Image 1: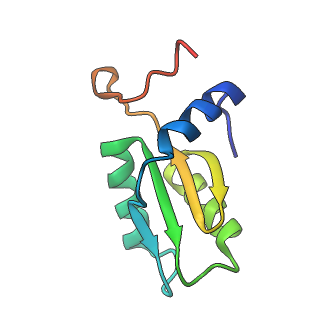
Image 2: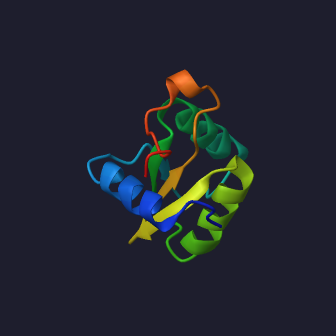
Length: 101
């Protein structure tokens, strides 16, 4: 699920510490609309938090599906909050420089 080096994951965890959840997943679970919203937010922010509100039992499976369907990298899951990262395709719009790490 993760193809980022351990040191880069640690850096991204630290960067995500102050972020608020960008997407909330409720009782409807992982719909196409939610996936589209996650994809748009990843394009703008690269590093995001997703909070599971009602589907806490299946959050690990939903996290796997989110990572797979969005082409993002799993950073960590803390409680009911998933942190994922996807590098922006345009180099000049990237917010996190991972080359130096």
